[in-house]
Image 1 (cartoon, rainbow, N blue to C red):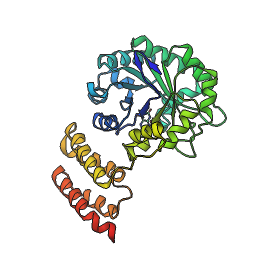
Image 2: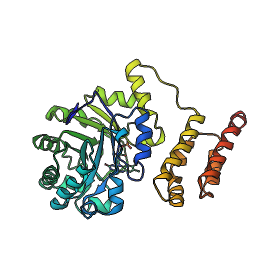
Image 3: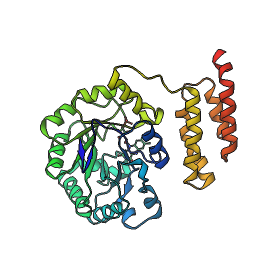
Image 4: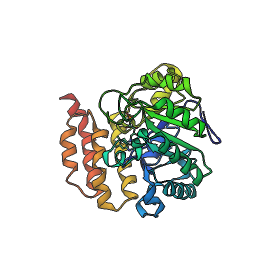
Length: 325
Ligand SMILES: Cc1cc2nc3c(=O)[nH]c(=O)nc-3n(C[C@H](O)[C@H](O)[C@H](O)COP(=O)(O)O)c2cc1C
């Protein structure tokens, strides 16, 4: 697959996730085999007005390339201006979010709301392209609901406009996250268009990655599966190359990575706020470990890093006993 000058063989991408895929988390996944990463989505109106938080969201580092900045919105002028601002931050490409299902975004015609108006969808793509000379990619869903699946028309339209890759979360807007992603649409999309295609939705194991590549997809994009297991990228690559499974990350590796993530996460935020906001990650790092609920509850008391690190290390040294019980 080619996006601009970047050539990638069946890339595994880390899905953009708001409040998750900041530089520290993108780096963690990159180090564990993610081939492509994206910023969290950024509102074009806020970016066009140079809102500080939005400018922070689109900051990227050299060591995470290839990286895309993701934008959303539907106002042509703001999209064009936001794309030009994003280009100044020198990503490898710009991705347009046309799949966000959240009511306040989709109901005003942004994100997945564009799936109800393909003319508007096309004008959004063209506005972004006017603002940048970088490659443009699109991430979307199958359609608004099961009675209006438009993904085949969308794929044709995007290809005709020169969009360089399409990611499809194989659910409708109405589904949100309910039901299962319907991967059966993927080969149909490949049949009607030559646009490089990333499968997305419910890809969480090496077998899932192989399944979507076997359906003819050019790449796979992993969201929640990476949040729960940032090692998924190297695990999937190993499986694709050998048919064998790598051992899952050990409890020690998980706890060490949690501590490192916490430190990196807080380093780019204001101390206390960062420690507080990081709480959402503990459940993922400690999932399935003996006695971890109690540990998580105790971590909520702390507002500084050192006691958290101490508590996690104490838990790590108690683990052999807990496992024996
Ligand atoms: C916490 C969270 C935040 C998300 N934020 C974004 C976002 O900023 N941009 C986007 O395109 N999709 C976003 N998504 C959707 C994911 O990129 C992905 O399409 C979806 O989770 C399905 O893939 P998965 O089954 O691998 O998680 C988000 C998902 C989650 C769970």
